[in-house]
Image 1 (cartoon, rainbow, N blue to C red):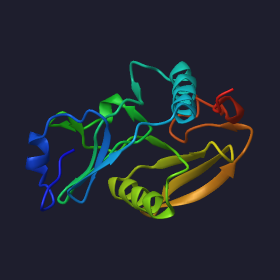
Image 2: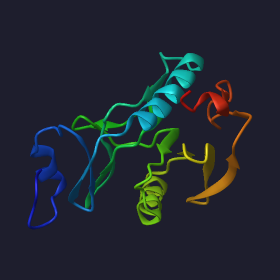
Image 3: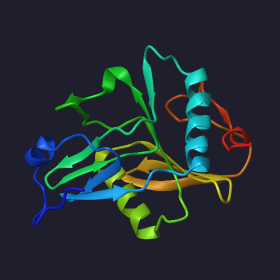
Length: 182
């Protein structure tokens, strides 16, 4: 684990070796996280498979891998969302990292997540201009849909059943019950 006596600059962060595990950088401080547990992974993979089956893979990327989404360079803040859907032609890549908002970002809650962590991530996603975020609760089996309105992510609905389609991709409706591992 890398520790710093002072927050890292963007340039210092770029010089670090690629992380071996899941980590984010928040205000210049590296935050290491344990690997996701199997139910979390299965939820993410189920949803990714459902979306990939309905979206044009030549035009749209559905990413679930451990990738760096740069929120800002000063102080350096990067996030590692569970799932992100990008229109390929809209991606801004610099220094090997994505510096642009996905069309849809999905976070799956883990039992250890705190309200403060969730609020901080949502503020970062707002600042990047992410138009739609889904927050999945495997425990409650709900999907909270947040939409960017006047620069703020606001809850549009909380769903337990039925079809859910990304705002930017109405051709890709997902049956909510199919998201959860069986």
